[in-house]
Amino acid sequence: MSRTLALLVPAILVITIWWSAVIIFDIPHFILPTPDRVAVVLFDRAGFISVHATTTALEIVCGLLLGSLLGFTVACLIGDSKRLQSITMPALIISQALPVFAIAPILMLWLGYGFASKLAMTTLIVFFPVTASTLSGFRALPPSWETTFQTLRPRKSRLFFYVRLPLALPHTLAGVRVAASVAPIGAVVGEWVGSSSGLGYLMLHANGRGQTDLMFAALVVLCGEALMIWHITNRISHRFDKKYTYAV
Amino acid sequence: MTKVFEAIPPNDPLLSIDNLSLGFEGQPPLATITWMIQRGQKVALLGKSGSGKSTLLDTIVRGSAAIRCRTHRVAYLSQQPALLPWLSVLDNILLGFKLRRQKIVHEHLEHARQLLIDVELSYLENQKAHQLSGGQRSRVALARALIEDAELVLLDEPFAALDRSTKIQMTKLCGQLLVDKTVILVTHDPRDAQDWFNESMVITPGGLKGPFDLSNFKNDDALIQALDGDL
Figure 1 (spheres, chains in turn purple, red):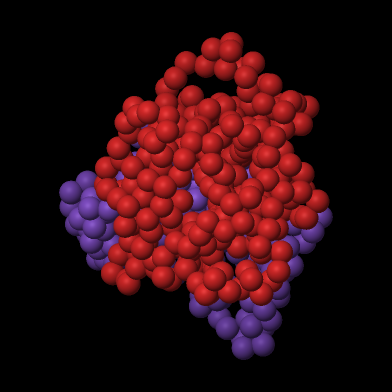
Figure 2 (tube, helix red, strand yellow):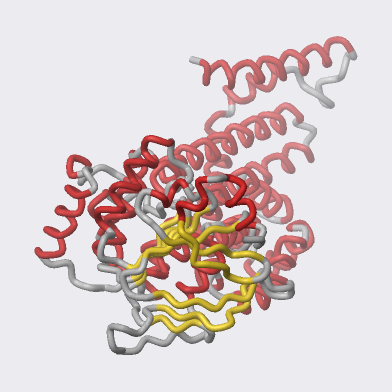
């Protein structure tokens, strides 16, 4: 009940402010349509919008999975070596510092206007938070734990897979949760730069034809998708969090 | 860093430390330590916070050119029992075998179960570690140290986070179960050691001082003097 309220109250608040602003400032529909007009478009063109929503959702989910997997793998490969970390860190930071808008045209050129370029952009945006948080997970093990495990005379690979890796998982999952909230940026930017399907494409298409209500409908669906993906990621990650979080 | 293990006559010290500079890289040393520990000896290592007590134990485990340890069977218990939360109590006790890729045979299981009886936790064998209280975790960590059959047991204020009554129980239990081991107990409170230790050493900026009879430190003034290196 309280969760439903937590979702409903902000939604009602935003709609109320939005609607009041249109009425009070007498804003024309082609600048800011009223929520009811957007709702009508959502209902009337549900089939059409859902095709584009599916494309974007696929790009986000696949990018999130691939980026998380890559980020986690890279962190595992360099996690045990400070030297490797110092060599790879500049490249990792540059990959995050470059705005995705700046490299989108290059990725389009290399990977084409289809699914692959959007997947690459989403993957790129997801990759860094997962890598960085997994690395911080490896570093977070208290020194007394390290000393204790040392006295058990472990094999290095066993210590990594049985102890260090699972203990870093809660940190990785925190990174995945952050990544889930920014993953839609990669997909939508990719669609803006060049595509023939997706909510980003639909927004540009509607904008060009002055269909502001359709543009807002696409935006509302995108918000819903982003929230849902974040919520599912959050639920899954909390299950693992409970299992692998250690008390010190 | 090298650690030297040698087969030696039983009268030789189990652990000898020769001019070990305790401290952190790039900083002046906290103290320079020269010390010998005989087999079966039980010593409380006292010192002010930050004097290097825990650093010394950590260095013994990791090894140093200045340390000659005649056993590789060393156990370390700290305030943090380092139990893997997703494993059961029994699996945590047997963790060392898994990490060494050593086959767990029936005898190991029986030994682990017997140790659980010894630490009075046999009813929690299949419980996950994250479901245990602080005192129960300390007992499991003790059982894990015991199954490794360590000759040298390093205790770094292992019961400091426990309430007084659990601390007394754990001290008694250690006194019984570690009777034939060589034990170094790091503490800043001599009361933690008085029930089962007679001897103590004190780390001061001037080096390691002692041995002192622990009963001397029933008087707070004597303890303060010792910690300041004035005794």
